[in-house]
Length: 81
Image (cartoon, rainbow, N blue to C red):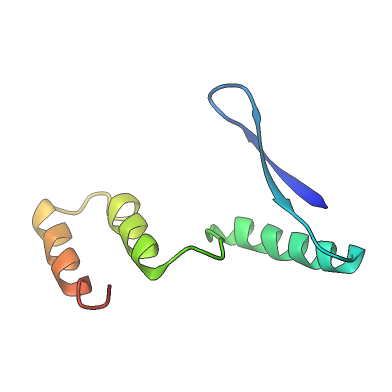
């Protein structure tokens, strides 16, 4: 079992991402991967889908764009989803 601290939440509790594995080496590899993803800003989860990725992108990464542009992107991406 291994964990990475991501600071503290608004409630004062520590935010931790945990990994587990059958061997010490497997846990080390998972921790290394987790650190790389956190450094890159990537969100990691085995159940994180393309739909969730696109919805997160539309919601968070389009600051400064007009509502028309957002609507256009949503329409263009709908067949992919």
